Image (cartoon, rainbow, N blue to C red; front, side, top):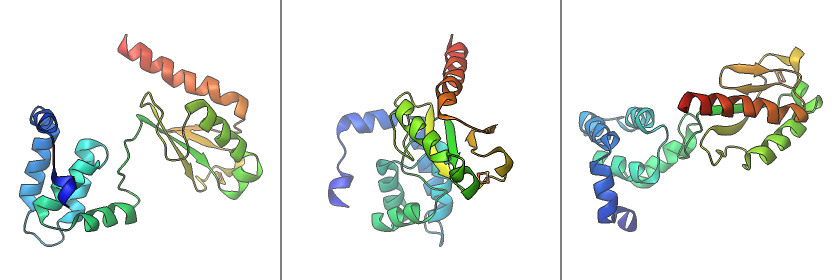
Length: 176
Ligand code: FES
């Protein structure tokens, strides 16, 4: 863990002013020494940070006295954990058979272009994370795209820009 443990003074002062790290310390303290602590600690840390960045993984490994490789292994194994930041909205493009046959791949390509990301990537503005999904049970509407809880059926690549703009505008209005 050597190099990963070295932190510059500015990182430490940023942490001191970030109450999420205090919450993390509390979570670790609550579980330290208990068998099977790693998964509940990772779960709660992800609720606090939204994802599990490297420095958080190091703190958890140290606090629970488990190898960093074990922390990394658990995060990689369980799909509910992520070490990448998530956008405010998760976009899911269904790649089930019905959707695929009806052109889901073209919709996905357009989303990649418009967002400037690959699958599992998050747009630079932090708004959207692009995922692919299995059948979401709306095959009659294929191809299907979801954004958060919203479902868009019979999607066409040409419709992508307008739909994304709706969320971007709503975000701008909320900030105004
Ligand atoms: S295959 Fe896409 S909703 Fe079923």
